[in-house]
Amino acid sequence: MEQSTNSYRKMLTGGISSVLLALGADAADRDVLETLTEMFQCFLCEVGYLSKSYCELSGRSEPLIADVILGFVEMGIDFSGLDQFIKKVKTNVLPSLQPQQPQKQLNMLQAGTKQALPGHIPSYLPTFPDPHAYIRTPTHKQPVIDYEAIREKYAVQKKDMERALTKFLAKTSQIHNLFDSDETNMFPLIACKPQFPPYLAALLPQDQIFDPEDLEYDPRSQEHHASPPKKRIKAEPVQENAPPVEKVEE
Image (cartoon, rainbow, N blue to C red):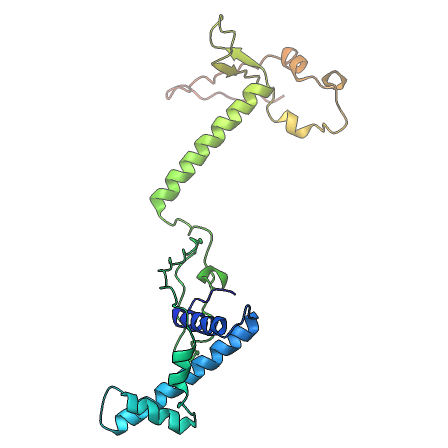
């Protein structure tokens, strides 16, 4: 038999079981025992209701044995053989109920606080689930609109980008050591190789040329063979009192 959570119903089940044992029954089906318990519970409720009604009708607050007898009469039950049944049948004394330990609630993770049902929803309907199941909650932080914070963040990102670009160039291009005995390259310097002219690399097509020796135009040779710049002749200043020069016609 399954243990019932209601202590009163458990006592009724124990009393019916003891009566069945006193009458000579060895075992009882669970469904039969539950049916007898339900019938006995309904019978006691009806007797108590009628006894309370006759008690209030007589102007009292607590029912007496006379009120219970009137309740039996109202229900049409013959209780004349109740005394003989109690004297003949040997009833077993039921053991006292042991205090039940409260069930431990599982510590389940809950997100937020559940909302109570509003007044227009009946109480027998299930409660609301966790708020994250049906209420939209943003999962990202709100953007920062403070000017000072934005400028500071931009400066940090720019510094990180420059540092990352410097490290990338130090690994992929030629470098110079800061010290001659520096073998670990702790302080590398990026080699600076200016081109002449600087805009020439952007103007020449480099799609199909994979070897710089195939170039017809070498900027280095152009730099060596370039003609020296012409000297500018300064004009002599004109004197204020000088006589005018006459032009000779051919």
